[in-house]
Amino acid sequence: MDGTTQQDLTDELPDAGARTAVDSAIVDDVAKRVDLSDRRDLRRRLADGLEEWLLNQRAHHQLLPSARHFSDAWGVHRATVQGAFEILVERAILTRIPNGRFVANFAAATRADGTAALAGRLRAAAGMAIRDGLSESAFIEFARQMFRAAAMGDIRVVFVEPEVEVPCMGAEDLARLLDYPVSSERLESIEPAPRTVFVALASDATKARAKMAGRADVFAIGLTFETDLRLAVAGLPAETRVAVVSEDQRVLSAVMDKLSELRSDLSVHSYTEIPRELGESSLLLLPEAMAADVGNLPTARYRCQISLAELTFLRSRLAGSLGQVAMAAEAANDHGKIELPVQ
Image (cartoon, rainbow, N blue to C red; front, side, top):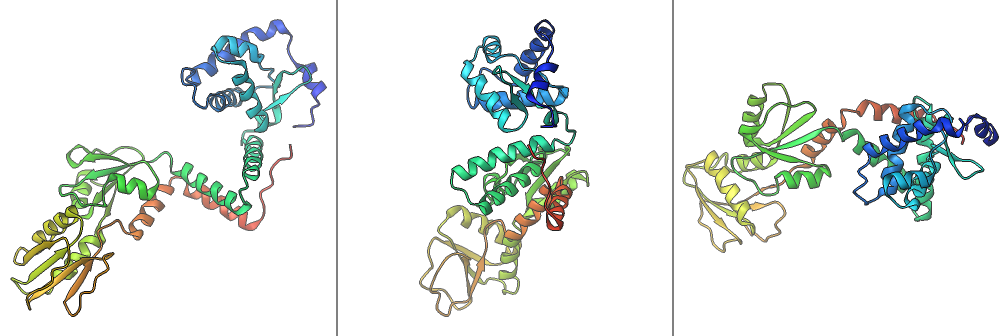
């Protein structure tokens, strides 16, 4: 705290008659911030709502209404309210006084930079991590990932539905690899929007960029897939027989469509397993991950997936919104430890 004793807090509290209007304001305002009909994780959500109210009000040694007062007003169990109070004590937002009531911690609630409140949360999180057996390095890495996720959190990612679907390169695949929510829209429906990044297959990226006309970011994925196929057939004479192999029928369809677009003069055939015989003028086209004994057959490989380079580039863009903040924090950490306030 800020050097104020518990007796000082008790002496500075307003009398009971003056508290009525403030009590009603807290109860009503927090109820607007929290969906009380949803009982899931209600203690934490009530704690978040109370904390937000206290910080916004810069409450000066604000005595909270009793748990019974909140319980009766909100129609929730008193133990739920008490649990929310205890969470805020761990976060250094509230202090318990001798009569069992809770008072806003002036030092925490009035710090404009919120450092004291953050310190309380970190202490509580570290305590839980230790109790759960998490190592220090694992806790730090987890915190780093959470920070980066929060930095990305206000950007919307939209996958532009392709004219020709390519397996392993859809909105769900992108969301899983990014570990980030991805919505999807048809090309004709997309419109520039604030803090929105559009992702399209390489074959559709040019059209998407033309529609955005520089008013939104459009990133292409699947460049490796197109490049592999383009290179595989670039020097083949006309009428060369190309045997496309994949155990996935959707992949076969995507490869066949792309090859017909690139070289309509080739004789392209699809197989779910490696054919035993091929003519002299032929090429065996296999997925990169397929293990196979191809002997002396002329062979080329293709990668049907979002590449690591594409993911890395997109992640860097998503983190860019608060990337400077993250870099500043890392730089400060490199030059010396950040001092947290002592509770």
